Image (cartoon, rainbow, N blue to C red; front, side, top):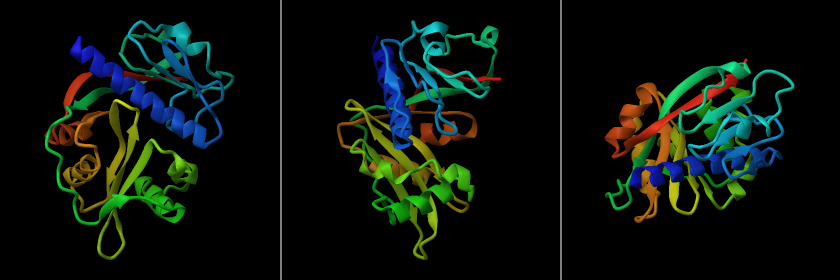
Length: 233
């Protein structure tokens, strides 16, 4: 039961971040009993629906999204759905992660701090996207005004961006997402920087896959369940 409660917190936290990103683009989503959905197509890389409970079914996510053209996506937070019959294909799988509250917080690495202005956010976004302007445009200045969102950036002495992460406070846990590093910076440094900004009594959650999972586990996270993302082909 404890793991289920922690998983529910991680899932809702991620849905809050998805909703925050959509609101920054003027596309507010809706939280239902079993799913978060957006009736308007969401920004690049962000799901059109997120299941919030293990009991959510295909109708809970498909009824509230726009499928007028291909490309809608569904985050199947408990890896329970089979949307192949609805014309979706499995895009990727990942693992939810959780770092319990009370673990020692790492010291903040030198040069890592919150982003506070639009110019800093633009530089952060370009580094995150590896120079891709369309992807960088996802991160709008409206995010800086959201009290539940903190964007962390690391700078070298010459001003070069070393990496960053997004922290989302959902009241019970803090989500870590969009964590990245630029060449020459170890992922462990970015994880230490992100975790150093947590409140001492706050657990951290998120999800990772592939080679990105190991650094999270080394930072004190544990896996708590699978997720899938489906794409309407």
